[in-house]
Image 1 (cartoon, protein in one colour):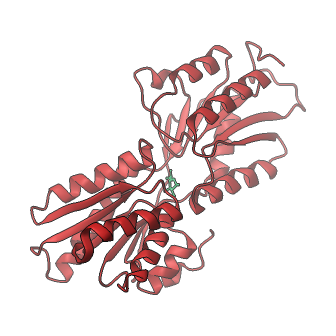
Image 2 (cartoon, rainbow, N blue to C red):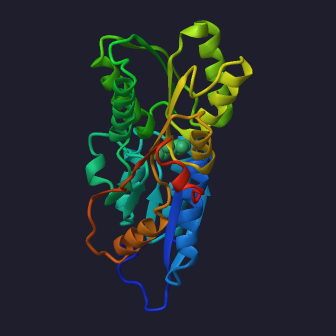
Image 3 (cartoon, helix red, strand yellow):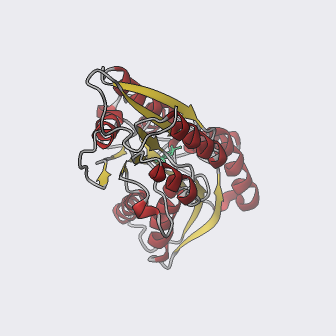
Amino acid sequence: GEASEDSGTKKGKDEKITIGFSQLGAESQWRTANTKSVQDAAENDPEVTLKFSDAQQKQENQISAIRNFIQQGVDVIAVAPVVETGWETVLTEAKDANIPVLIVDRKMKGKKIDDLYNAWIGTDSKDEGERGIKWLEDQMKADGKESEPLNIAHLQGTTGSSAQVGRTAGITEGVEKHKNWEIIEQQSGNFTRAEGKEVMEAFMKSNGDNIDVLFSENDDMAMGAIQAIEEVGKVPGKDITVISFDGTNDALEQVVDGKINCVVECSPLYGEDIIETAKKLAKGEKVKKEVFVENGIFDSKNAKENLPRPY
Ligand code: GYE
């Protein structure tokens, strides 16, 4: 039915809280683990009903999912936005319907956006990029190669997503601090394994033997890139140093095998926090506006003891 003025704040005692969750897609292992984490947390909570919608990496699908949630009069909307911009109109509609909004994982940007959502839970993408750079700096120092030239190929995530924008900022600003480091290839692989492989193939076609380091903005693209590197007869992790992001089981196994050198962790497993926060918002309780999920880093020193991974 129609969303009423006080939707969510005056629930009957045994009425459940309905959460509408617009997930951006299923592009990566990170994403499917994040979806499962939210769904599990909702199933384990007798107070909650979850309406789930997968947008297949398309913003227009997310916008119509949010409009459907508004029309159905859900108590709270959670949204993992595929890109940063273009949300103000639909979030104004949610606000007008008095439905609180929780942003998860990626961030939104826009002049009025701060007034249009109630809380955000996710990770700090720029910090992740910076930590990848720090690992490379330490490694070069340890190898006595800090003044040698370094040619870097950079596989980016979905263009305009905060995960891409943040990681790219951390990586490119870090590279600029070293006058002997250069990004010689940079292109999006859309966070998928298939495109990661394709783009890495293109990088190697145009730059042959010149690539020393690969930054891949997630593990799925890194897995595809490793395959591409091996298919041209090179050894990933040795001929090309590979730095990745997320921390999947597949990627950590590659670290143990020496094919990925470093994985900056970004955990998707905070479904319980998402459900807890969404419930509080539905009940009209105060929550923190921004919550950052804490994360580590994996390399040859600690990958083995961290296997198996939960996803
Ligand atoms: O790193 C990637 C996924 O937004 C942090 O999205 C997330 C990223 C994650 O597709 O694997």
